[in-house]
Length: 461
Image 1 (cartoon, rainbow, N blue to C red):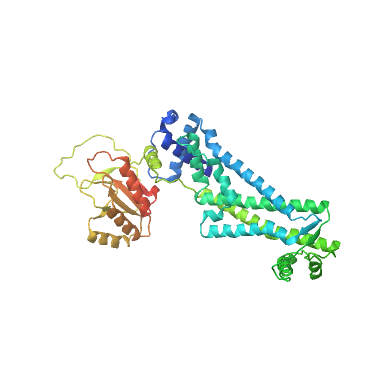
Image 2 (tube, one colour):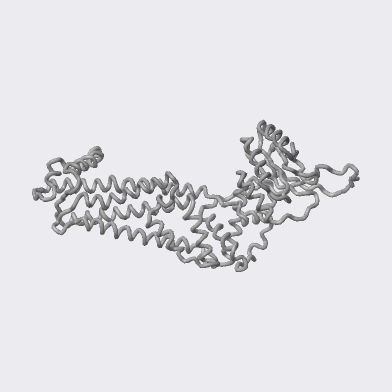
């Protein structure tokens, strides 16, 4: 049976349910998943586990009427985003309107400063934040405010607040959050510039304006030179810019400005706003949207969390036939007429197995041959030397009943560092031993995470 490709929204819904179940288990009904038997598998696969989680989540959501509760954080963020964009439109219109003088004049460089200056500064801060992974710089104040407003009330232990917190952690933090907030930041500044440009066009259509410029501290030649620099790229695109005579005629305090000069300045002003304002933002917005989709497509659940470790044992059991390494030679074999059961290979093919401080009561899977048991520095050196020559997956066996201390973690790290192949960890039981508590299993999963072993490559016998 083919495994469905689940979307980022499906994963977020599973995360929201995890957050709710972790704190409010007693408030949920589990009647709909009572018939979800453990699924025996020959190998643990993330996609198959995800399918089981999605089925379980869908049933719980329907059984407990959680659909609207889980969608509420997304709706709140959308509402806050719209408020942010509306604020950007108002600010852009106010900035453009403020540059219009009472005597039907437009201050060119003041207008460029308020519409482009802050925008370019925002782009520089965004690039710095993206390059150095500083989310405070890569997201604007308005975008951060929009992402914070829906979650400003921190109610304790309510289903709604737990769902909102899980959505916030999945969608507004990490790589996904960085690009999602970047998209909102670019939309904010695009709205700001578009509102300003639209108001300017409406004003120039309805009234005749003279364009002026002037400076007190800068040299007289600085602004005309800036005009020529800004106009160079636009000339290559076929857009005309004011010549030296038209620039001089627009100096503040001169009244000699004809229709051709006004038309040249209008084209220059709109072209500059489009070329240096809208175009860069559109490019950055497109990049951010693509990166957000890429981040969402590569988003994975943290299988090292206790919630998923427990569900993995309940939903995805492995079928392993074990054998005793040191069988008692005095024991008399009893003949039975039972039908042999099918044996499923749950281990990686051609795996090279090494044990760490295992006693003679440890049970290995029947198909596995332990090449060496590491008990001291000499046996560790021998094992690492052998591992450098292997051409298959490395299988490290540890006793699940013992506590994973720093010594074991150091040995596992050294074994993994000696190979370029995929490392696996198998948690082995004794021949006769009491059940291992969940906390001990979690400790081994954390050790695997610290050593770089994927949760998908951990086998519990």
